[in-house]
Amino acid sequence: MIRENCERIMEEIEKACQRAGRRPEEVRLLAATKTRTPDEIREAYSIGIRLFGENRVQEAREKIPQLKDLEGAEWHMIGHLQTNKVKYAVELFNCIETLDRKELVDELLKRMERKGVESMKLLVEVKLSPEESKHGCSPEKVEELLEYTLQFPQLKVLGFMTVPPYLENPEEVRPFFRELRQVRDRMERVFGREFPELSMGMSHDFPVAVEEGATIVRIGTALFGPRSK
Image 1 (cartoon, one colour):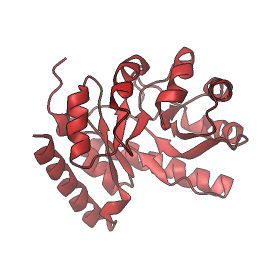
Image 2 (spheres, rainbow, N blue to C red; image 1 turned 120 degrees about the horizontal axis):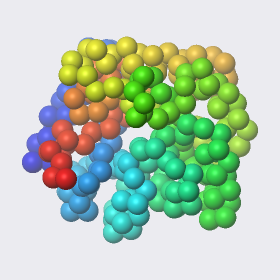
Image 3 (cartoon, one colour; image 1 turned 180 degrees about the vertical axis):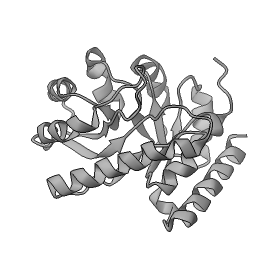
């Protein structure tokens, strides 16, 4: 089932790229593995998926060590990262997609030094949704956060991510994806450098995200099927 689902997703990505005049190779599929078993993750790996995302550090601590043999697998933290969990996150993940505050920068630096982690890839999470439950840096404060973070060469800021509100009609989510791209473009002008990654779009709205410039789409249900818990 995972293979067939993946083929459908890749077809959708290809069609969205055609509509937007993009190349499909510009978009990577990240398997969102919250509540998924190591066996399900292994099956996704067996069909060529190499990018995996976990929402909770505790769950990642249980699963990722069981999957150390998956050569070339890259693990992204895609959920809100509490400061007291950074000490584990710096060893578990290749990329933190949810950088949203200076305190997290400070804690990352401290824990990386203690653990001997030489560099960490990061995306700045931007809060574009009015929902209280959503996390992220406000668009107005992104420049300030970047200015602080870019002082430290061991922190590799590659781009931005966002979690828009869930709306039944994907077209209603388009403005949020477009706004993230505009934030990225503005920051590239301000800092005179590229931020190539835009992580946006999930199971029900990823084609629209791809049309608006997503380079990483975070797919769980459409890939693995409904969650069992």
